[in-house]
Length: 200
Image 1 (spheres, rainbow, N blue to C red):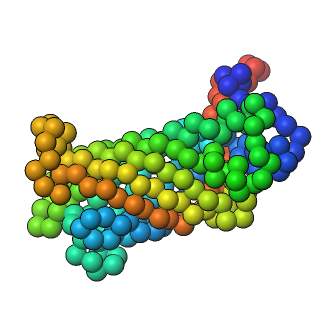
Image 2: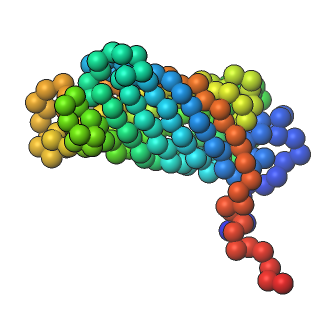
């Protein structure tokens, strides 16, 4: 397992890691808003990332936050994300050595999630679907741990469209754009060296 860990470098501030390798997990908690075709919703999210490269996330959206009458009124998404650039660029020394630029480029990721929504007058989870999107994040202080601005956008499909391949109305497919302010915390969880310790 230890072979999966990237090599240590003397100074993460100048070598392009900017604190991302001070631990193996990054915990993210954020709040923001979602712009969608049928009204805005408030949003909260939690994310866990391994070596800033792959992770899982969950988000909750609620139209009551803005009293917008958004449709659907509530929505939960849970899925996975992949951020393919960081380790490859860092291990090959292709950083720009400018903190915000490197961190923004390495934050570009792909997201895929299942979606459960609640249209007005229906129970929660009445509609099920999926979403696929792109994301980019901007560090406010130029370090891995600290406040970040996140932008996530993509498309959502209903279960009906996924099953039939046809779109009957705007409720079955829609674009979304989420903007969040989040705190990122790099922590040591020893994921890469579980079981590596020699027996005593």
